[in-house]
Amino acid sequence: MVVVLGIETSCDETAVAVVNDRVCLSNVVASQIDLHREFGGVVPELASRRHLELINLVLEQAVERSGLDWSAIDAIAVTVAPGLIGALMVGVTCAKTLALLYHKPLIGVHHLEGHICSAFLTEPQLTPPFLCLMVSGGHSSLIVVRDYGDYQVVGKTRDDAAGEAFDKVARLLNLGYPGGPAIDRIAQAGNPYAYTLPQGKISDAPYDFSFSGLKTAVLRLVEKLPSPLPVADIAASFQLTVAEALVSRALACALEHNMNTIVAVGGVAANSCLRQRLLSQAQQHHIQVIFPSLSFCTDNAAMIACAGAIRWKKGCISPMTIEARSRLSLEECEKLYE
Ligand code: KG4
Ligand code: ZN
Image (cartoon, rainbow, N blue to C red; front, side, top):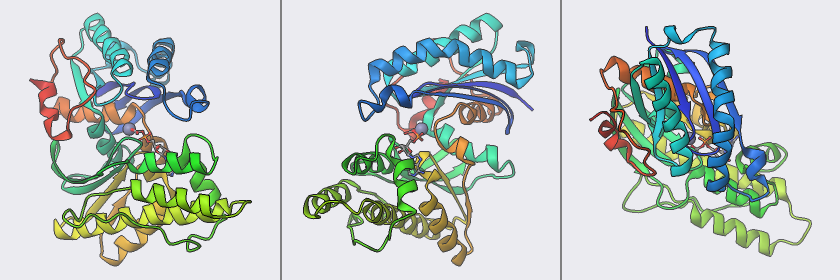
């Protein structure tokens, strides 16, 4: 058993958590959604400044709620890449300071590895191999997880990430920010078969995604339809199209790679239509589907701490000279421990 304190500041959530292996002891997330809402998206400069204002308070709460004191914490894990550079730097600086002050090992974590590990918090018995469907605001990919830390990205988005598509379409429909939960909510009252929209298939890459054509198709539809707009029907049709694009590729990919478990993670994995369709269609192929609980789907630090615990067991410690990086592919994440 290893107790790890995790820190996540890669985008617009200031988060600190404490886990004991795969058991979450505390998970504090201060969302900046209200700060960025009027701009319709995350403003990097504002995000970094708000992380600075919040980090000490969030840290204090996470330690207090864990019921532990510093002597019981074995290591400090922190998101180092990828993300907004100024935002990441706040978390990394905080983690380095704590590691120095309390003489703890520092474990840099790749944000996407954190999302993959979010599933272990909900399903502690889960072990690789499995197929991970990663669908967040910044990333949409299919990843074959052969073992802990052994990743092969077999499909990714050519343009917008799934969450980005939700956010952009929500803006078109005046549903506010963030768009995913707003579309999910209003779509409950709509007819998902009201409009046929393009799924964005890519001929030479069956597991890649493309959502920009779908976004443009929704724009054309909105321009064409008379007001008042049938917002619920458009939202439901859009949501079904995204869910189908994700589910069909995830299933085909799992079957090709002989994976009998699909793990769906990231903010869009909170989507109710995606959850229903993936569960029911996977069942027909005797494939098990795992969704982290909703609080571990969107950005949080428990998933970073959990990834840190797994890394710690593999003997992966980061040098104190480690720096935040805005870009780093998942397949390169071993570089964080050189
Ligand atoms: O994983 P996440 O919190 O942050 C990133 O690492 O990007 O994902 C945020 C994304 C946003 O685009 C948000 O609109 C989307 O997840 N999202 C949803 C839902 N809840 C959050 N998309 C669809 N349906 C939802 N219920
Ligand atoms: Zn994320």
